[in-house]
Length: 78
Image (cartoon, one colour):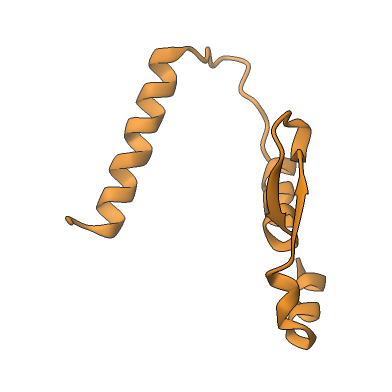
């Protein structure tokens, strides 16, 4: 990340350059900036799945509901 920040100081347009790829084992291609790709790579490199967690529809819905509540609390009422 430091290298990208230093490079962006000299060439600010580097943060806007996108590359179309199926990143991180995905089967779906998307446009990624170099900064986003490196940031997500760093994040995923430090996460570890919890073998005790069972991922089913109810758990996914609960996680999404919690995420939406957090976002609403951060941005406030519309």
